[in-house]
Length: 152
Image 1 (spheres, one colour):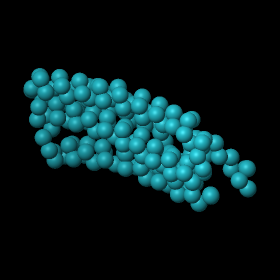
Image 2 (cartoon, helix red, strand yellow):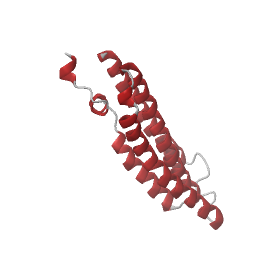
Image 3 (cartoon, helix red, strand yellow):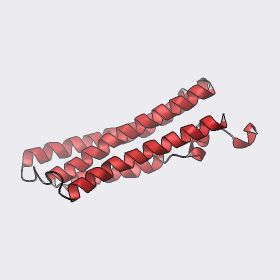
Image 4 (spheres, one colour):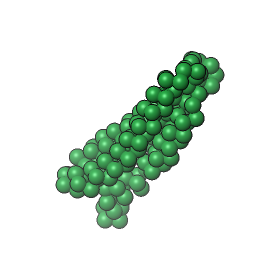
């Protein structure tokens, strides 16, 4: 059982690392001139729609990622066996990070393609929300109400 907990905690750390690496690579690529930075900077319509979609995706994704995870923990995880609970925890955590990744990438793309600071603000909101998702073994034990003293 202890090995399953450690494996699930490691997996959640890997998912979080990928969550941070993909936008970092995108930003690095954009900063060194890898693709069209400011390609639609002068087009008001494209800027408006990109900002609107970025704001809406951030407004939807951040609460969805945080609240759905809490709801699943409260209503689903308590009613299933321990190995299934660990798998569900890993799956829901991955889904949560993917939802946040969509909002983060849309914000970064809006920032780099239209040179609009609104995209950067939305990306910063998503990164701040991801700090509430920091993974680890202690977090997993707390979320799943596993007491280390009771196991031994």
